[in-house]
Image (cartoon, rainbow, N blue to C red; front, side):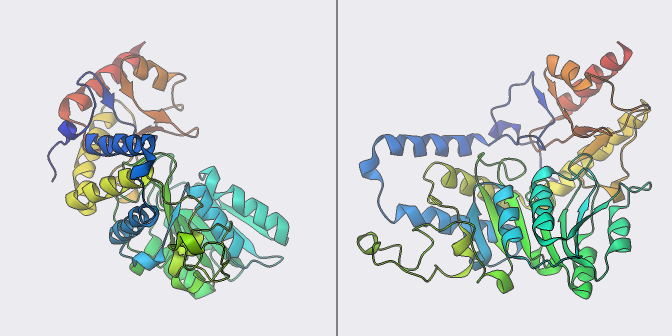
Length: 380
């Protein structure tokens, strides 16, 4: 169990921020590194050609450690949608095949598949929310040889419903389907092992549970796809780009591994050092330890919610860093706004649940304040 880490964040005592699934707070150390990056740009003579490469390579290595991959498997991307678009550019789908998604799945892992299905005369297979909330069983029940791609999250973004991606990955391989995962709401707070799950692609944005900046992310690309087509062609992804004097000796060959999928201007002197510091902090804490600590918090909060007649998914059916509060008759209109007016921050996504997502900065006083304000709002 990790003790409260609020001292590492710029969160005043009168703020109860239970909304990491919306935007994660960056640690003060990460903020300070961002300020240093901005200052460097004001004096650009301090920026040297190797700087365009070193932070990206460090980021590859750090993120690879987080998901049990090789640095060669990691691309630097600007958003999770860039990663899913890269997957959609390269995965084979033929007329009549299916692309599997979940009901109310996050749009960035839906839109590219709708476009691909339209272009290839394929079909979108949407798994409806199961009555028993067992997403894994619902997915496995429809996974057959007609499914070409399963495009899934690790947890459902509206309420934290957990998917057993190891079991889903095994089924994908059995029926010949590719597995594309948006890990933005899980990686960094919930252990993710690409060796066990074996996704074809894993896309993650850094601004939520990776506690990093907005506008940056990572893409894991399985080795079998690393000779595929990137969605853009830029100078830095080509072989020999370290030699600035030789850039006009145009190269058809790419940098090795997943680097060909890096976004242009990937050597971001502002964002990459921030992301690297944030992932380093997560590795120091330990993702398994983060999950255990947050699960203890959310289980206690779920018990307190039940006393108010509010239901959450059971611990075995949800990720430990996530709560979806389900109210009799649906989420009361304007409830999140009433909480925010009292400086208690949560969010509503979809029609079924109010999302409560703490991180290590949350303390017992925040929890007590949340329930005090919630009860008052429900009585109003």
